[in-house]
Image (cartoon, rainbow, N blue to C red; front, side):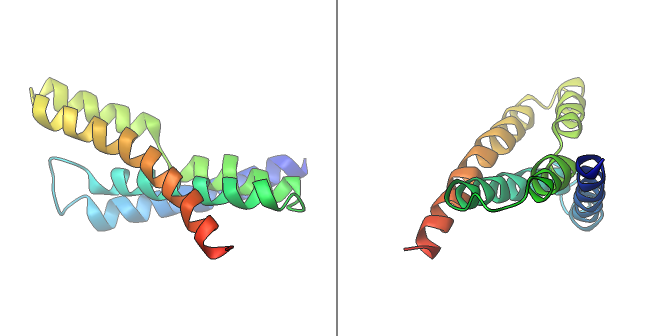
Length: 125
């Protein structure tokens, strides 16, 4: 039951942050929803940072791990919204934007994850 509550609290907070990114950023550039992209890049960075932290500090309780990873970061990042936005670009025959957004989300998130690990290493040297 503790795991369920931890995940639920984390997911709620992550979803609220994703919503805030959307409300704040999506109007800036209507063709590419920057809120979703920001959520996925920030989520990638944070999971990389958390991976590095937990690799070196096993004392983090399981309920906290679940709240942060499955809950908060799962609620923050969004593959389904990214997929829907990509399909919308395809249906509007925006193929260059489609390719750009796919590269930005997937490549950006992976690079952000690696950067999160790197930042942890810099901070712990």
